[in-house]
Every structure is written in C-alpha cells, then in structure tokens.
Length: 159
Image 1 (cartoon, helix red, strand yellow):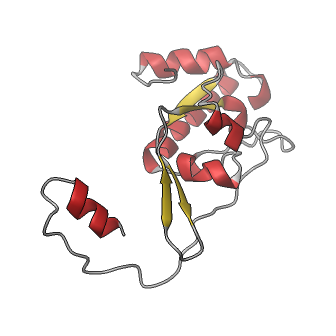
Image 2 (cartoon, rainbow, N blue to C red; image 1 turned 180 degrees about the vertical axis):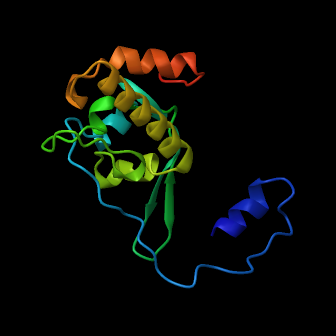
Image 3 (cartoon, rainbow, N blue to C red; image 1 turned 135 degrees about the vertical axis):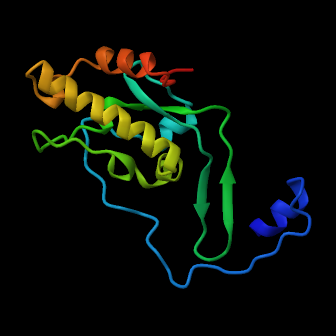
C-alpha cells in the first residue's frame, strides 16, 4: 500500500520497490503513565493547543486496521502536548518522556513519532532542571518557565 502511494505521489519514487520487511511482529503500543492530564481523541478533533503545551505533535494519525490496511488521518495542524501529560498523577517525582506520556490509544499514533518524542524529551529535561533549581515538586513546576526556556532555544510550542 505504501509503496504504491510513494510511486504515485512522490517524485523520484516511480521505480521504487520493496526489498525487505520486518522479520516479526512488533509492539506499536508501549506502556504509558497516567498523567495529571491526558491527550484524548477530543484534543485531536478540536486541534487543541493549550496554553500549557510544552511540545507540538504534528504527525498524522495512523490507524492500523487489524491486517486490513492502514488509514491515515491528516491533521490541519499540530496539537499541543500539555506539561501535565508528562507528570505522573499518582507517583511523586515521576516524569515521563517520549512514548510513555499520558495519551489515549487513538492519539498515540500522533504522539509516538520520533520528532515529537524528542521535543517532549527536551521539555522533560528542562522541567526536571527547573524543579531542582526551584526546589519544588514536578507538579509545582512553573510551565511558563519551561515554555520560555524552550522558546529561547528555538522550540515551537504554540501555533
């Protein structure tokens, strides 16, 4: 399906062919924390970019339909990942990054992309350093400080 897509729509791929695929079935899902906030399908439907976003997820949602095919759902623009999705709801001092953040299965296809995981990782590192410097818990970290530090470094955290 993807080879046909590339041949038809991507210049330079008209003669592309598949030489190999993965030798086994691998997990697409991963364990995730229950955060003080969770990204839901409603966030995607609303194209939500909350004021407490510390990263953007701009990949398309890709739904694999039980061996029947792949359904790509393009987004008009990225959605925001709120800081609360990184902070554990019930374990003090636990901050998640990458694929482990608090997100429902449907939007996970949007947030698991490597660029998004790297952006979330940068935000998590900054949040941890602020918590240490300000001698506060992760739940008490000033999200504006995280966003300002990210923006100073060139990160895009809002539309």
